[in-house]
Image 1 (tube, helix red, strand yellow):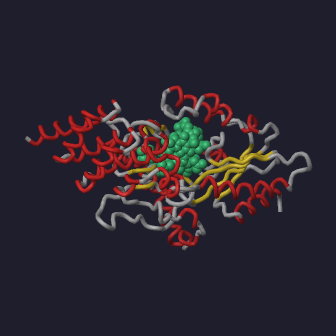
Image 2 (cartoon, helix red, strand yellow):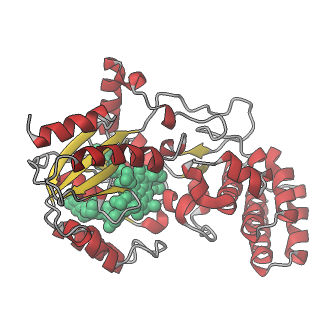
Image 3 (cartoon, protein in one colour):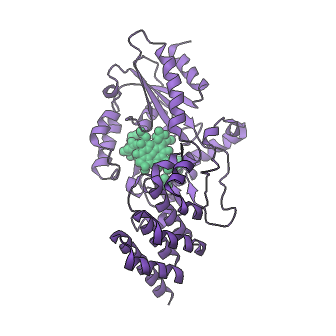
Length: 396
Ligand code: B12
Ligand code: SF4
Ligand code: SF4
């Protein structure tokens, strides 16, 4: 068995679902694409995503000078648990499927460590150099996976695999070992443009081009401040991430059908990605508004959702409640507007009330517009009162 075959076998034994190899040569096309997107402002809001970072992340030898190979790994994360949509009739939000269970960074890193340890035993003494990357590392994950033949670029910008669709986390190991490279796949999306048509915010502005600032994933996870007014109605009931451009993808449908038919879907031992009781795929929204900082930390410990922080998540909850439009949410939103400790949450509670309307919402908004100590919240309340006045005029 060759060293390459041995490493691939070890990776599958450790629970990775796909493994391919490419050389450690630079990725000039990806670097050009990244710099172009940054210059066009399409990555705005992600301050850490700089041209200098792009140069490093597209050049494995900038990270590990003796690098010769990059091992590209995919981990399937979709579970066969159905979305537990609105059982009680109260408003529920949507959490993207990658965040239903435990944080993948932790579990994948543990597997990568084991694989790296096996690789180190293969290198001559003094030459056992490897580094690991999972998402947050400075590596351009999809470009590595594409050149390694793990999958191909979809027009939604995600990497599509034949076996598991796009429902995979990508990670890498950069090593000084010379391994046998795999070839890129000669596949593409053809004439399909379903993801472009389905994206609610028009974030996929052209095939393979995403405007980060419009993507619900950015707006609900990465954005720290206020969600732009014009995008709030388009966020729907998403409170953390978005899967729409993957849910409509026929490549994913084919993979899911094949996995179900072969019994492999349910057989994956992916307990860590199953919806947790405390997070779930579709949590009831009103109780979330009452979460204290401590309860938030406890409930979302080791969950990807902790990245949004409490104020970001509750901001999203207010927007989702406004979009769902059920008056049952008015008392909770009015309470949040009157007394939440975070101005960001009070401001978005105002918007939620403005979207739902009614006398109780109007009273709460008028009080906040006059008395809230924070000008951004008073401005949000005035804006929401305007929304109500416009809606009233439209129905007259
Ligand atoms: C920043 C980031 C985001 C940002 C920006 C997304 C983006 N498309 O760039 C935001 C917060 C919006 C985001 C959202 C999501 N993300 Co994200 N994200 C990243 C991160 C950290 C960097 C991505 C990056 O380099 N972008 C730079 C821009 C310039 O890339 P790009 O425009 O897509 O261009 C690339 C290709 O399209 C290609 N390209 C460019 N032009 C052209 C032209 C042609 C013709 C072709 C063929 C190719 C091509 O070259 C570029 C280099 O790869 C990676 C992890 C990593 N370290 O790589 C995860 C990553 C891409 N995200 C991931 C996931 C799962 C998501 C979400 C699905 C999460 C969710 N459910 O909410 C969404 C999906 C949104 C979407 N449609 O892309 C996974 C994707 C797995 C996969 N199968 O591809 C990654 C790889 C994380 C991981 N390690 O698993 N993400
Ligand atoms: S994740 Fe949602 S908002 Fe972002 S590009 Fe896909 S469909 Fe559009
Ligand atoms: S929906 Fe169609 S165009 Fe979009 S990624 Fe899937 S196959 Fe490609």
